[in-house]
Image (tube, rainbow, N blue to C red; front, top):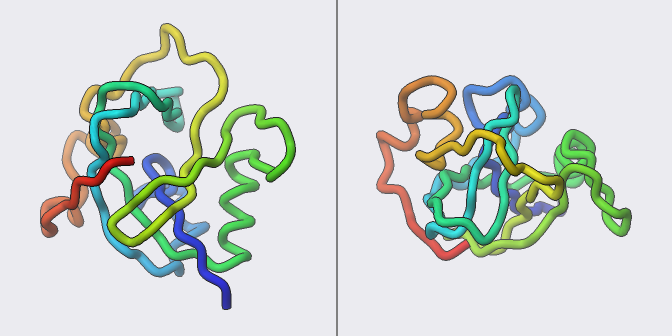
Length: 140
């Protein structure tokens, strides 16, 4: 079966409700990006922008075609169609190139997640995986 890597930073991460979409996917690991993003709190979910100055915490998963399609659907992404909320770009991770969903609408005035870690922002603590692992830092 064909596997694709995705890098997630919000409600698809472990501990959030949308994680159920990829809970059976292969978990590759976590990493902190270089400080090149800005993560925003949109209420019930985050939005990520490129060209910022924050390091963001990502979890990387190897997903099958069905899981990848379900994630695309959740994010409102369809290849070849003008994105309304999220576009998908490829980034380098310690496990290879991964798809990453970038928020395309304006986020001016929307609260910034200074830590770059949506789990920490929502729950006031780091995820267990982060505490247990040496987290890689790569250029996103």
